[in-house]
Image 1 (cartoon, rainbow, N blue to C red):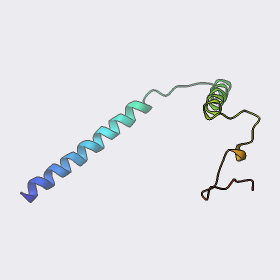
Image 2: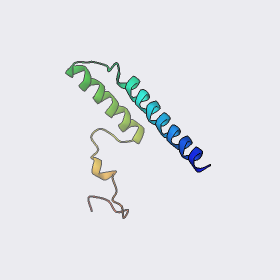
Image 3: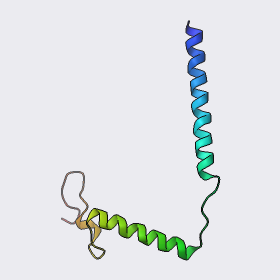
Image 4: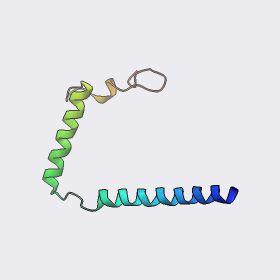
Length: 76
């Protein structure tokens, strides 16, 4: 009984490892290639979208929106 349970555990562990390996391999098999200008443009667009989603203007400093663990503002 104990040997069968151990075998099932080993097979599930190996199966999970192989599945994870194949998932990562397929994700990184064909990376998108772009030049520096295009990459910077995409990064700026993503940062602007994130700022709009958070309700922050571009000229607003980050520290005013950030809080420490105690709940106090960083700049106080």
